[in-house]
Length: 184
Ligand SMILES: [Zn+2]
View (cartoon, protein in one colour):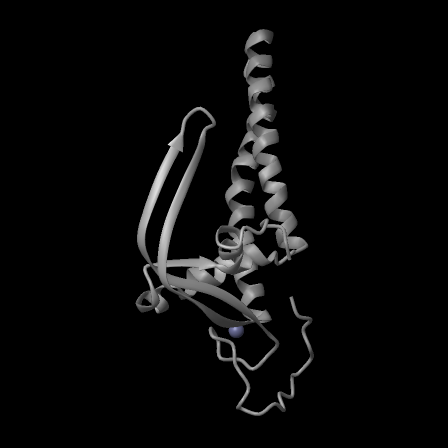
């Protein structure tokens, strides 16, 4: 990810590339998407190993560079993780309230502990997911593979003519170049 530069005066010319989404000449990063047509695909499952092998043939696979400015990416990121924070925060909160009410319901101790243990198991699981969402909202990592999906989601419809299959750059490198997803 490029560092943001202060260019509030915006003294750059109009000839430079601009953000694909908002047209701003601010600091941008190029994200690659790949589009092509699937000619054939074959799926074989091996139930012994539980592995599925997919072989597919594509034609006219081409790389399309999309400029996205930092402001657009930050906006998508905030919206995405704000929704996640609320989405996982509400059930976490309800479970906490439930756990606080259970001791006052006059249940037998075994029933009460049974419910409390069940609630805490769910609470820990859902609470962890909530913490991950909050973490990305407060300390955004702008992880490339995730941002690529955000870009792809927004441009997919614009490149329908380029192919019936689209991939992010990370997917492309993983599927066609057999690089591990963590290579940067
Ligand atoms: Zn933008």
